[in-house]
Length: 133
Image (cartoon, rainbow, N blue to C red; front, side, top):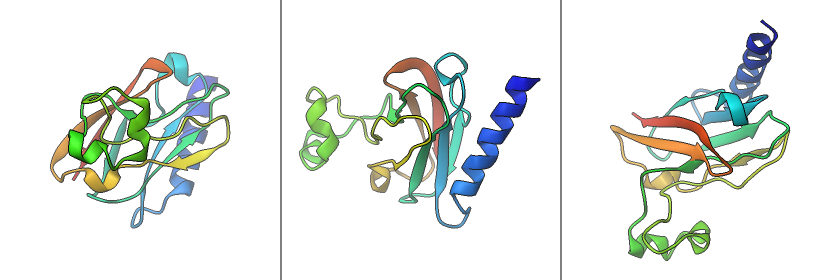
């Protein structure tokens, strides 16, 4: 019961972070490394900002797991320098600590009507789906 209440509180905080008309939100909650994302499904419009929030004590990030940038686009994306050629994720966030938020980069490249898998690169069992409407 306590875990459910903590999860609901984190979910309510995510809702407070983003107004529905202007941005989408994703969050890691308490025990995220074992339980996964508080928001295992995130819905956004093409180009809409996505804010990632961490409500867990462990650091987390929000990274595309199965969609990669073309070599041409990867040259322009500043986060791609950390990845092997051909393996740069289409969207990415910084790794953040407890209580922090960050904007997800690369959302301007997402296509309408597409679903993208995401994960935390520090805790690969944390997975979810980003739906671009």
